Image 1: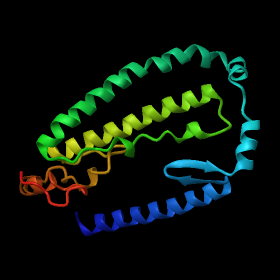
Image 2: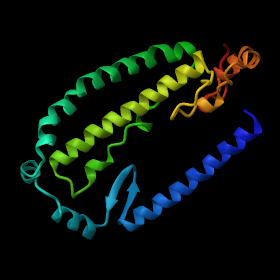
Image 3: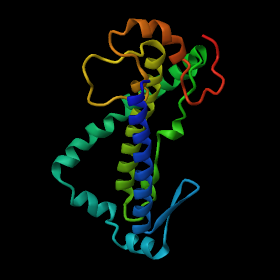
Length: 200
């Protein structure tokens, strides 16, 4: 990476630290803390939130018609999501050890803490669980595919994409054949998890 990119990445890390400090203030404001990856609310806040919970029956009776009729379409997507999950998990299990790419930890991408919110009813918790799974799967898949791209074709695009995975900034500039040929094997082993990179 060039010095300007190093500087930008350092600024991103600083902003992430600031973001964590802001999140800690939010936790204090809403009277909860994290304990062994679980959310713990103060008892009086928990009691208040339980009193404000809308029952599942009332939730259905007050639902908009368009929400009710589109729910089967939303939940029908679970089947392709499960198939994609199986496919990328099997792919990673077989191919990553063969290429020397460190495996992606599922737990880094799937977060299910909204089900602990006392003010959500059963249906709302199921909805949150489903969205958490879908978004976690997209994040997990993006990281697996990002690591694959870093191994096989770490070249930036000529056009700027709206967003990209975190490995992309290390990729070679579009059209820079000399650096690509010279540095490809080094980049194939450039993962934070690899303390002693294996040979090609």
